[in-house]
Amino acid sequence: MEKIFLNNTLPDIFSSETDLRSEIWKHNVSFERGGRYLIEASSGTGKSSLCSYLYGYRADYSGDILFDNQKIRDQKVSFWDTIRSRHLSLLFQELCLFPELTALENVLLKNNLTNYKSAAAIDDMFDQLDIAGKKNTLVGKMSWGQQQRVALIRSLCQPFDFIILDEPISHLDDENARKMAELLLHESEEQNAGIIVTSIGKHLPLDYSKVLLL
Image (cartoon, rainbow, N blue to C red; front, side, top):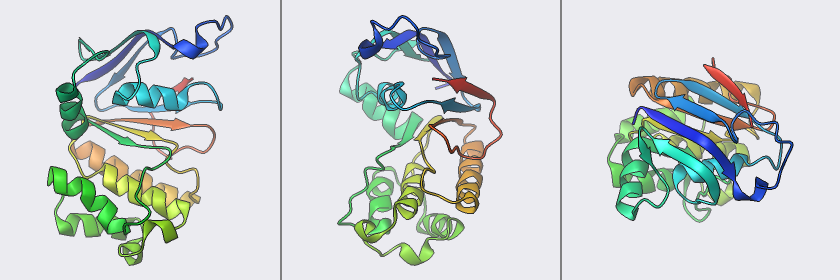
């Protein structure tokens, strides 16, 4: 996948709004593979909705969203299986980790499906993010900031053309945010992948190709 294109897209909940001040909703917007994009948003402007649309969980919007030249609305399950396993990775704002499993077990849930990373590579990512000592800790006993780092590692355990990160560092200090950015940048450059980051304040420290106001 080389491009994600939004064509006059608008969440249905905003259909009666007459004073939208968005650079995304009701505009034509392209995200190119290899680019780095920051979407700055206020609470309630549709940030998580946008992520859900791009990942195929919801379709309550007008206009169109296209992957390359293919509209994604009403696509079959097989289409989304391929997209989510090979082309698009998502770090959820809610993280969606299993608290009753360890950090490593959460990561392996994905990697056992994709066989994308070696055990050594996974260990190295835990080391880079300073949570090597937490691999065998139950996620439910970890801080939210530690969980965010686990969720990033899990999101990197697959091939992708684009990776979407929904408020990925909301509970991290600057140093740990920098380490996350370095790991993400290395992994995305290996695949010439696009990065789309959302933020309602604190944002991942990257050299962004474009900053858009939602």
